[in-house]
Length: 460
Image (cartoon, rainbow, N blue to C red; front, side, top):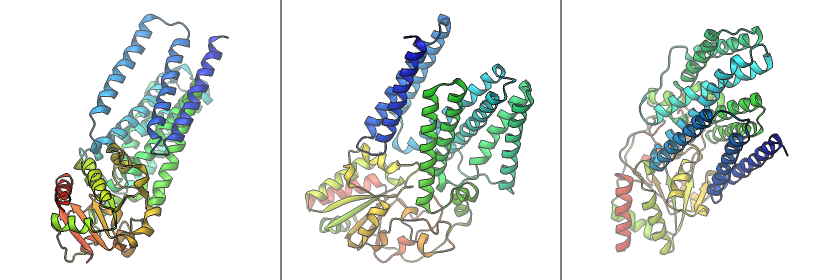
């Protein structure tokens, strides 16, 4: 059997492991194994490509292995050291690197394919989409880590972005059909795509970042798929299609969860509008609750639902809240977690956070499942969540989040909200729930407050 057939079999096996891995990622209980399956498939594909390739000089092999070694060390150390609060920007950064790779492949392959419109068209598509994904992901990274604190909205930015997009596409089409070998024009298209990626993400508000990350991830997958077409490489094609389609489906699912069309996310700048206008200001009276009173209330409850949010991640309080959950269950209290689809800063952020502290996956309830249960819940403990529990989404038609499905915690008997302060959430608007007569505010750092709550419970 010649090398080509062996490599085709390796690529087929790798493609199957990608599909298996992606399927397993759909369930928290199998997600870790799914990741390992996909990693195994990618390792198999890379090793097969190197070993089964036509003979090249030792220098090339040394460069390839050196690059793999450097990338592996950097990736491993970064992933091991990253804090859970920094996971969203790390995901965005890694995704951007994938887009950059697709764009660089196109730049390098352009001159090898001049005069072949079909192949040049694939190269242009991969370069433009990869470049947009790269620069857009870097802007998303800067927004998430606080480097870029404000969204940038130029006058008539929608018109500017639309014109820039069509100019970039038109330049790519011209290069494809003209047969031009101009390096200047090629770099011009590359630069336009990078600029468009910046303009594409810069105006989008922070509240939409989970959707943006997912959308950019689908772009990177699509760019990789074009690379698979270019090289007639089945595993690149399969991997790119899986990433692109999964990212697209996740983006649409998150838009559905927010009850907002994707067009509105991209062009509406939801988070920025809210931050600029200040959102709806409800005002009213709030009441505090002490640690001891909160402990007594929860200790004598039959059912408690915990709503985790970004504040839980910031405080690194996931282990303490798991201890609280176990302590309450030992006393006969039914405890579960209510997970909103867009809680946190990336898709599945809360699921990953709680998995880190070994919370039983069966206790994680999605919004549609848990909302009917709030009316029969004694206490809801909201830790660091804000916009996803704001009743303004249902009650205030002037609110920027109006129409977004929320966790209906206001239907429970008692509500305890743990926050550092009365500051608005990521959408930049006031929260009606704070002023609900059933709501008590437990101010302070989540880890500190929950630790004290656990200590107090142990004395009862």
